[in-house]
Amino acid sequence: MQQKRIQGTALVLPLAMLALAACGGEQAGQGAGADTTALMTDTVAPTATTATATATPDAQFLMQMSDHHQGLIQMAEAAHQKSDITVHDLATRLSQQQQQEQQQMLQMLQTSFQQQHTPSVMPQNQAMLDSLQAQSGPAYDRAFRQAVIRHHQEGIAMIDQYLPQFTNPQVRQRAEQMRAQQQREIQELQAQLGQG
Image (cartoon, rainbow, N blue to C red; front, side, top):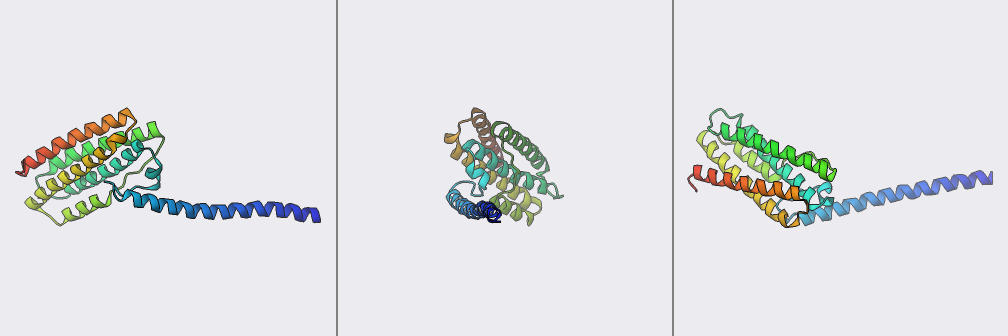
């Protein structure tokens, strides 16, 4: 009887210690996440998740730029719902281009860094999308072009932030290509708006 009681105690104590450790670990993880989020507030993309916070700079960039692309994809798709605008062709081209780049980045993230990521719209991009919904006709055309310019400027700022940190040559090459393309498109859109 005494031996059974000792064996039971020997099983209960380790289980209790595991339970306590799990609770403490969860709280510690929450605290670490909060600290990481606070540190990310000064960056271009302040919506870093735990996954991005623990990833290499190359992987962080691929995740955050995929999220950034999702914002323009959503804006372009919303433009197709407007029947009285002239930016349909621009919206189609941007949507296709951003989706293709996003898929390439997600594939690179999986192949080179063994990480999965589901893109989501960043808050500042959602604000752009929401502000566009109230517009129509020529005002929408102009506002859409202006929003794309701002979106591309954000993307270039993000690329510039990460460029010195890249260690993967493929990620660097992809980022530099995107930067050059977005800069060209900004100039084209500014010319269309009479700002070039």
